[in-house]
Length: 259
Ligand code: NAD
Image 1: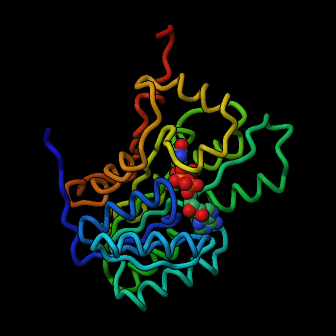
Image 2: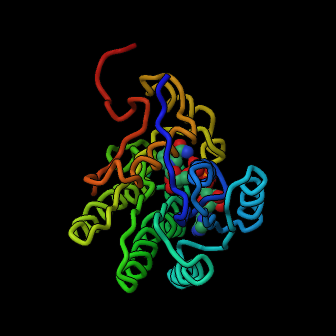
């Protein structure tokens, strides 16, 4: 079966939330393609473990602490990467958290604020710092923001999450237009349900309902998300910007009738 392969040798790739799940798979995929990967996560211990695993497999990786919901922490991270690694070519703004799965009237306001900080304001903080670092140095780069199919469609008991992911899709579109003429491409990844620690925290009946709605009949694998990101950052996607790439086994098709 035909497979694409990529050469990212000589590049630096930042992956936020890179210690687990989709971010871990993206980190591994870029490292396997020759990139130096900056694995940035709020869980430094897990980021260090991921970097060690990648190094043991012959790849280049370094772990960094960041809280993407804190603008100062994000700015510090971007400057540290430029200082220590000397460049930044691909920025994958992937860290995200889940809201309580409850109807809106039962959603705790503190939870709303934290989900908004980590899933949406974080994308603004990350892109602002990354774009400024590109512009200051007169270089270009590729940015991919992890949204979700929840950025394109509604979802029961997911109001905060759905609102933030729609925001990520909107921010991606707007920012991509601001910087398209400068050669900086900004796209969004919209995964459907993916088998990661993120979903194992959800109640099983909730997961069962989500799986039932997937035409392919199974959750995605984190590696399947990473492959889409490898393509989006590559020169093969040189005319692709502002795009929301859906990788969801058909979930967002919706549709009527029964299987
Ligand atoms: P995960 O929980 O396995 O990994 C998320 C990582 O982000 C963890 O390593 C965590 O420590 C880190 N993180 C959390 N808060 C952070 C913060 N404030 N600062 C820095 N790092 C932080 O989750 P995942 O399934 O890999 O999800 C990754 C992204 O994909 C999220 O944005 C999520 O919304 C999105 N997504 C996931 C699914 C899914 O079904 N798993 C579906 C659609 C979209």
